[in-house]
Image 1 (cartoon, rainbow, N blue to C red):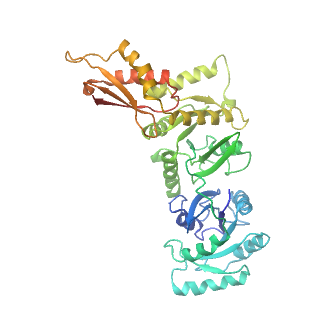
Image 2: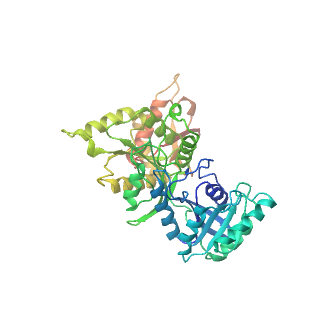
Image 3: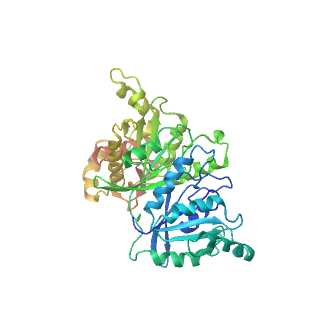
Length: 434
């Protein structure tokens, strides 16, 4: 990735607010509590025709009681390594602190361009107060108010001078795969195992991941975006505002994705909350696979996997077309198989069937088993075509579309799946008068 702008600084200076301003979306969670952001969080911005990647980081701190301190520091250091330009964010209202001075020493060793961004300078008085940050000796100070956007234009004018020309939006048209599930099923561990590095912080504590974390994956001739999400719990169990917004970001990641990988805990099985998340993906016509994690913790007997799979399929009901893969992220068993299957599902989702092939294979099936007559009237399906939209959607033209009932619609869907591989993908059927 080229043209990377990293936003760094101590906790609670407004890094996530500036991140959201630069990517023009409310992607990062903001709160007055320090330490909300933990992982590196990526988004894309554009200014005067130049595209760039923005990285939001957790607050850099030493000697605190936060159990995530060292992991957050590691994530910040990785962001500094990746960056083309560094935005060192400080608080003009709070003034210069010892933590700012310590972090400035870390940045001095970097050979990257560093901009001091004095946030919360929303009055003339605070803009004057920001001048004390010249004491850090890191160059020009830019007073801004990230919440309103004041001063960000002047800052970006200077930032883009250090960026390369001719780089397009790097995420345009690339498949997006969201990793979803309840808390503590191994979503972040799965992402880290795939990438072979600590992309997100992993602990035994449920709710470690808060934001939806996007990562570009380019390995084994594959190219897609993986999104690690916060665990989704029942509404009644969500007590904190931060967790509430985490769940919203996870649902947004589901809506933005092409394929969803649902992680479930093999020791707990498929629970009601899992079915709610899967049902949501079906509603939005997303490709789906179910990844049964922690399979190494299950005691094995004869056909254990087969029995477990049958039980899952019976709970899935009409969603029995969703592929199921048994994995152990800790032991790296079948994790790449899960990704290969997700890519297959994406290919199924965008497959276009020629109209001639569709009619050649489906009309004989309809002739062999025509729709049941209703009130003495016979239904004749004469022609089928696939509609030109993102998900598999088919129009059946017939004389009496209003008389076709759900069981026959299910029969047609099964025949479409039999002839044209739509594993893991919802199919929509429409009946039109010919």
